[in-house]
Image (cartoon, rainbow, N blue to C red; front, side, top):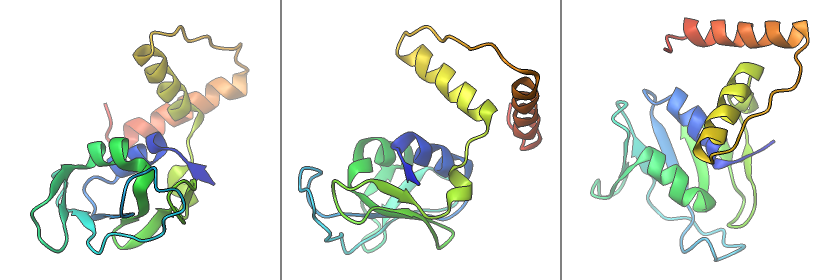
Amino acid sequence: MTVDYLDLLKVVTDHSKSKLEFVLFEGAKTNIGNTKVYPATLIAENGNGKALDSKTGVYEVSVPDLIIYSFDIIAKVKIDDVIIGERPAVGEPFIAIATELFKETKYEKLVRDDILAQQTNREKVLPDMTESTAASLMRGFIEWRKAGNE
C-alpha cells in the first residue's frame, strides 16, 4: 500500500506521544534512485513535536514540517522502534509496512476531503448516501470521539 505525505502526517499526529524516528536519504529529492541514507536519524520523543539529530542533538525540525517539506527524501519511519513505512530509493513511492495504521474510516475520509476542499477553495459535493454509508460515518465519528478527540 503506497501512502502520501498526508497519510503519514495523520498517522504520526495520532502517535505524537510515541517515539518517532525518521531516516532520510542523503542529497536532494532530485537525486532519483539514490539509496544512501544519512548516518544520523531524526528522533522525536516526549510528544514535543520536534525531531533532533540522533548523533549531534543539534539539528531540530518540526515533525509536521519534516513530513510536509521533506517527504520525498524520507527513507523510513518508525514508531516506538517498529517500522511503519519505508521508501526503497528517492523517487520511489513510500510503502506502508504497518498498513493497519494507515487505514482510513469513511468518517476520516469525509473529514479529510472536506478540509482539503476548504484549503483549496473548492466546493465539496456529497453523493447521495445509503443507510449503511451514513451508519458507517456515525460509527467512525463515535470512535473518533471515544479516542478523546474534539
